[in-house]
Length: 171
Image (cartoon, rainbow, N blue to C red; front, side):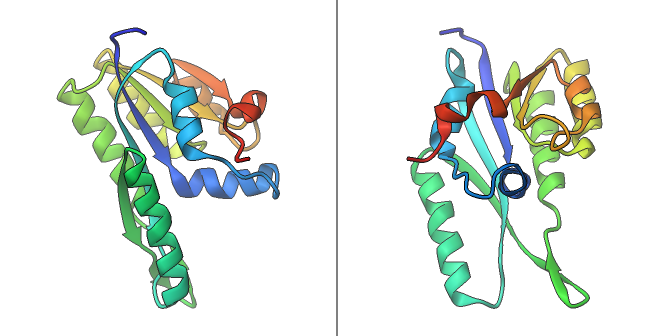
């Protein structure tokens, strides 16, 4: 194991929706995914960013139980309520929360290596700023087109989830 202090930043909603696009029947064990990505590293903390529905008590209870399970498994969760936009509810602030933590913790030198589980090109500038401080950010996600090419190029390295599904597929 390397003594390299590592933090994992997981955009849960991006991963969930992209998994459905990749393979609608695929279920991922997030603890196994975390352990696979952090193997041989000193994992300081794993963050999971997501949202929770509003108005539907059954869905809220189910999502809350899932988030609690992640917390019991060692994840630090950052969960924001969905926001109403017109007739639908949308996720707001999750990307900004992830980027804020990645930058603040990076500038505080709380980690030397970051692992971002996301495919959204909106993270490119955050990666560039953190890497400017000498911290390597590795991106782990599905291959193109689910992961933006700009994001892959901005990262220190890219781990294709496509090629390692059996490591973290839910049994």
